[in-house]
View (cartoon, rainbow, N blue to C red):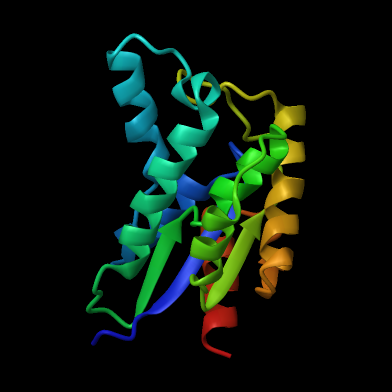
Length: 178
């Protein structure tokens, strides 16, 4: 099967995306994991504390290509869940007010997810760590940019309520099975 439904799980930092993806994977759903943590850790290994902030445009161009490649990868399952999407790259650039050329926008225009689930900011579960440097308030602003970018690209978004992981999965499955 090469026509896997591409289902995006996105939202600001610390909103529960990765925990949700891991739980979906534990239920034997096909999942593609977040790429940015590996790039950031690679940068730290090379002595760059926050590679995105050091050179946001070069970092974002590389990340965009990796996410497009991940999106285009042949899938064999009915549904594939993605932890963050291609368009998130542009949302982050918008958040830090970095100008980018139309080439990035044109590349993003070619990508359409079948469903876009956005997890809202959730202060009770938010944690900073060695990779997640943003404050909770910054996470809220990033969330707003993510909503704007998916609306800009005319993708229907579904905001998932704060709930347990199992409840969120049940909500997602209800939307998928409609």
